[in-house]
Length: 395
Image 1 (cartoon, rainbow, N blue to C red):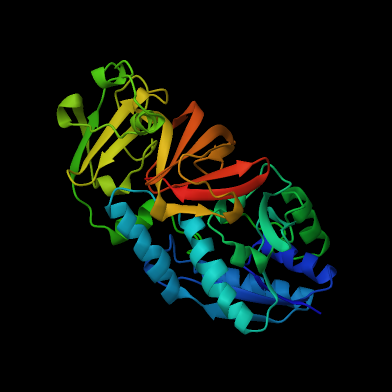
Image 2: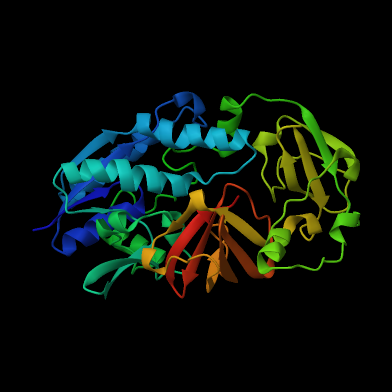
């Protein structure tokens, strides 16, 4: 009998995933990851990880599977939290959930599970794994979950063939309502439990609060840049090569104070991200202000009125070689090769038609339509049909 160790998070998805595995005839062991115990940054006096751990234990008891807790808080702080602060200080916006899967669940946790004799590691992600054979070698596919509304393949966009080989996603063929229904029928304590909205594994923590407790406030100005600003209306120059054109389309506008007027103050440019509307606290404009750029060196936030402001839109982005990742190594592009794909630059975004262009220094992603708030530090992931084949950090 194959042994599977499942990350039981105390939520409904991993609870039902454990049940499905049992039904499929695996020997199942539940392991709860404790990733944070600095109670100074939880939202209230609640101790969320303790509640979650108790729920996970009750689920394991109900399903009749062994259960234990593993403390990964040291690795989590080092690999996720420190990295996040470093990125925010550089004015980039990291995605902790993608990192948490790459660095913690499918690396540190997976190694522990394999040491405990597991054949596979399972999670409650809404995605699927496929296997194809090429030249006698098995290649693993990361496929979107059946439930379009809950597909979480994007969060796993940094997994490798080695990690996928040892992974199982038991609820990828189910929809969220079906998962809730199964949990209700089994009378699991997690059946009605709300999905966690906090940082991956830190529990009920809101990101701005978390950042403010770690990065020092520093007063700066908010500048509003008008839509009519000259650089938005330049005619596109002539290009000598495709690479030159892509470099132009993905360029970052170098905003200066005199491109607009000062309309307010903020407590630190590193707390803000492109496309953000909340938290600016500037009134008196016809349309709401959106962040179009931040300059952490000069501590200035540049904003524009309305969600159609030209400062929010770009047609292309760049990923450097160091931050480029292929799940399907066999589909990796060589210099000057291109590929038609569907891509997304954030979790909830619907897939967008795009073309990949491989150049010497990295990879350009050119979209068919303009994209709003392409943000440095976030992940772009690309798909062929329903298979996620690669990803990278937007630079």
